[in-house]
Image 1 (cartoon, one colour):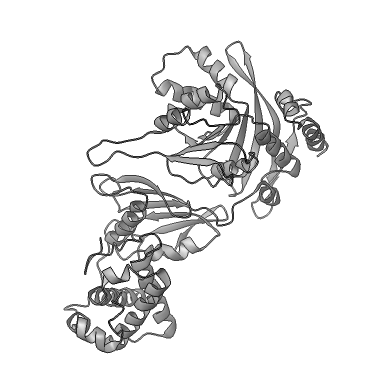
Image 2 (cartoon, helix red, strand yellow):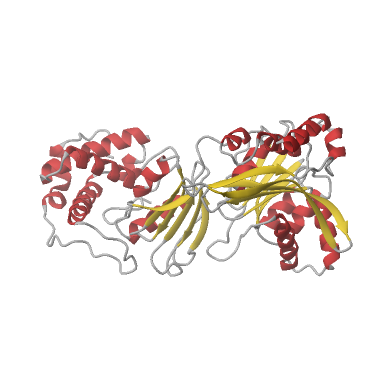
Length: 488
């Protein structure tokens, strides 16, 4: 797995990190003895590294060019010097210290003119290259970043506070970027290369990763990371952020507690998965929960949870396990609640069937911009599965399965709001009937362009799930919550 010079794909193997054998002294003399030729030999031409034609945004100042050339020389000398098989046996901190010692020796021997700050930056960069995710490490360490979007080696964007901005992070070349992507996906048993250029994976902290590599990505490998916060968000925090009112948060708690079947609808980046994580906190600890996801990212706190994950086909095109396969199988596992990370296709029919056959309180997310569009998308996805059921029958299945649709939206100022809590009440003729319990109304924007709005109650005195709330002894709390929403 670990190669010599020219191979930047040093894998991160769990707690073990990819130095010198412990018995071998570390110091300038050792470095000189083991790598005198590669360290002392000056490159034939110190020409700046040519830039990929596909990354026009990648502009380097002369100072940046010097830094990258220096880093390249030190990195090459390091790879010729260290014993990667011994390095892999050390823990992360010990390996990092060994690498720092050797890099300091190389800098001294090569007599590079560097300030202390530049030397520290170089040490961190090289340690990240060998042990971590290279230039991505500083971005992954920041908890205020929601998304990292790498468009080839020379361009990286991040989302901070709901706004996308360009970062100064870049990669040495497209080979380094692809190597880091391969390191990420290999941790979850997946691969990305020319024969399999699209891959979904996850980081150890649950962050969602998508990679699309050449030849499909024309301008170099595109890497997208949807980061998860280290501190899991709660409904109380969403209230503080203004995503929902206190009374609205209580309403969502009751909806989750009384085992309503919930679909969380929203666009990309609207906070669907975050909201789903928040709602699962109110599931009783004695319930058996089974989650089905493309990339396991849900963070449930209950003790009785079984997590299932889809699997792509192998290099021979066999062995694929789809979301439909997982949902069908989990019905044989005695689930009390089924939670689907994201419904994207015909598996919606199997989820609706599960909701209709005694698995109350099941949840899932779906991409849609309004609650009404959510219902239409479910109908369309059932048709995608090749089912030839009459339209009215399909709508009856949907109306009989889904109790509540929670709409999450990302507004134009970057803020995220829960804009609708909508109840599905049944059918009238061929039409599914819904009623809003709460919605978000926009009043305008302030001088800084921030959206001004408020959550309002629609005045529904008794929701359709009232009897269910009474069964779970939540009817009095529900009545008080609706009164509080009405007063606000």
